[in-house]
Figure 1 (tube, rainbow, N blue to C red):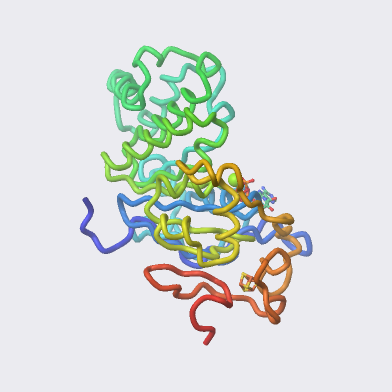
Figure 2: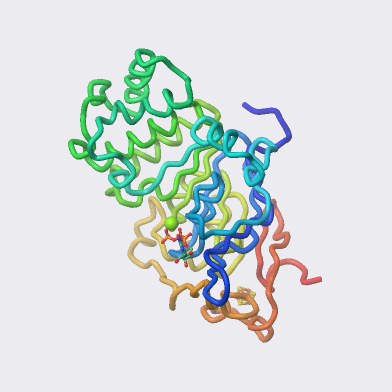
Length: 326
Ligand SMILES: Nc1ncnc2c1ncn2[C@@H]1O[C@H](COP(=O)(O)OP(=O)(O)OP(=O)(O)O)[C@@H](O)[C@H]1O
Ligand code: SF4
Ligand SMILES: [Mg+2]
């Protein structure tokens, strides 16, 4: 249990633009997020809304074409201002990322045990013998026999590979895990197992979790708080259950009804989708970027952009219908 007041992660006005000039793509446009140590924050949104860009920005893993501004404070230290040596130490040891599609993230020609041991060795955390021991422990911790260390990635199932990725993420005892669609490629049963595993591990080790998914139901089931992103911005944020069950923003509402509620067969039969596609970040509509798809848009929504504002009970939303407009 953490008693400090400084959050584990604080993102302030983060902006990420790919490229420059007329072809520039503003993928993240002023995101503010706070994650206290040991808590779980979910980030939801449709494809292309900037979730992975934001996740990669947290550890400065974006390609060279990306320009970042704002602040990313990890235990109060700005990741964007870190020198390379410090950044290398923070990656894995301070914070680590579990990506979607473990097959592509693992090296196909190296045994998984060697891959799990690598961060321990690179960061000087263990001798080769101790790293081998720790690798066995980590595998057992994620529900795989220690002997699987000798396997190559293609010898494992998708779920087992994702367990390996989680073991790698845990290897250096990070304080923060960023999980970008960690279960999307998996079938529903395995997805549930992996989610429970992540939940157990972060609870046992007091790790902060930032979990990204397009599926609000999955996030609501796992996280304490939820942020909903649209066109590079957070448009709603609050306690997970409340945001999922009664979103304040029309986009949050549409997103939550687009996915079946866990344990509610009726909602599975009648998920209401959202018409239209998310906007192209290189050609965003004016005003509230959601207005072309919004079922409750009013005069002025096409001109007037909306800031996140207090929506009561620890919630914030960016919509003209929420709170006061002053
Ligand atoms: N390397 C890149 N260069 C240029 N544009 C990029 C690059 N990576 C992503 N983008 C663009 O940035 C926007 C946000 O992409 P991002 O991958 O962050 O979205 P996402 O929310 O993670 O989507 P998904 O749910 O499909 O994973 C998209 O319009 C995408 O095309
Ligand atoms: S500000 Fe207007 S367009 Fe945007 S979500 Fe609210 S009602 Fe819809
Ligand atoms: Mg993504």
